Image (cartoon, rainbow, N blue to C red; front, side):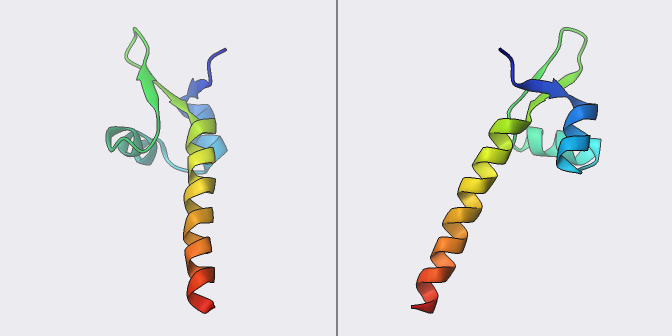
Length: 67
């Protein structure tokens, strides 16, 4: 089953504009693919799960600094 969704659905899900989403893709920050017709598809679930892990690690580091 494919986790890749259209630009429109990804924009709604993430609250970003399409240009920002494509920039994230170009920078390798979100998994994407191009259809045969040249349209972007994005793996939003993977992006969100990685963000949660990254933010958890960052907040964990901040909590360690307080000790």
